[in-house]
Length: 503
Image (cartoon, rainbow, N blue to C red; front, side):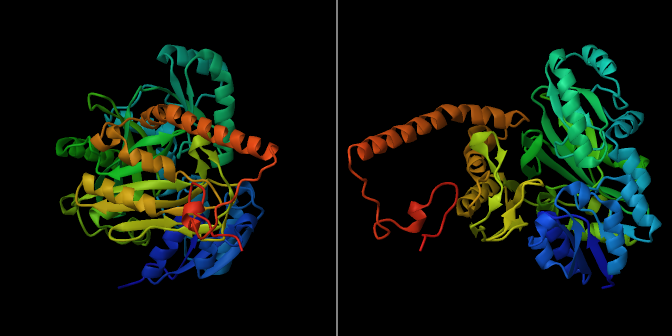
């Protein structure tokens, strides 16, 4: 088999950089990693064939530094650059700069990024192709007074979104005019920091929608296919936490309608490579175009499990000018896949980041279990970037089996040194609404609200025990510690995760 490229630079970090390195290795392609000061000992740096320092820890001085990345790619002899997701993945200027320097950008052409990666331009394109859209602005809002006027016309609540964004960055829900000014400032600041573009636009907020997206692939020879849908409704702070393929809501006629709309939209923009068309779906199963992500999605593994296609390899081959080699009729879906995002966050404290050293790590394994990780035992989760540790993905013959397998895998997953989202993910897997497929973007808020009384009860119990121990000590007595002979280190370890007994 012909190797598409000899060497590829990965302009990213964490688990997605590791994922791309593995695909390159299977294709016989040498991989080049780049890293910041904070990532000197990161897993992607250790795994790549070559690794180069970009600069200081802030993303603006490293992973967003276009000139440094292109200079490194040229110096290393790389022929192509894979941007992963986030950072510069949807930056048309970066794609253009790569092309100008003779580097292949493993993603869509700059023109397609501008047409579809700019969320407001994509909305205009969708309207032109008779794809339903959520009511809102067709251009970014630059004046706060104008924003207030449009919000009143749409009717509160409204949603602010980064024009060049994704992953929940630069998004703010505004329920009243008194919140609009501060929300605009925060959304613009976050969008500028994350994407290098502070533009935001307004949309009418759809209450209790489902978030369903369609994966597409398009080659440079005129073939465009969709690979079905993914259900992404379980989110916190507008960022996905659990994804599945297919969606428990979507039947075959709806899948066909959504897939055709997605393909029609991307073909009209001259789109090439992998992309995702996102929809909001209301209670009557009406779908509305939300945005297009002109890049690989975090949740792409669930589509890979169900279709049997390696999306990263497909991206690389398409970028090298190869044909897809199959049409829509050749795409089939088998079984069910679930993905849980393991973040270094504390769900009990509002999902606050929990950076630090991972002192202990045991990832799950077994049949049809995949852990796309960017860390190892002894690695540090830095404070500078998204705190995603890994993506746990499982496949089952049907949804019930996939849920059961995910529950088993989560129970095996042990992390020490940082708090993680594993406890809330375990709760989600057993929640009656999740098991029944009754989902919406407000699912997690409801599930955690229901848990709070129980959690508060646990906190009261812990407080009472602490008070009793303090009183016991004040009385001049010291509680006798449990010996390691009576309880194992696993039993003694604190949640979440496990720890080694100290010497």
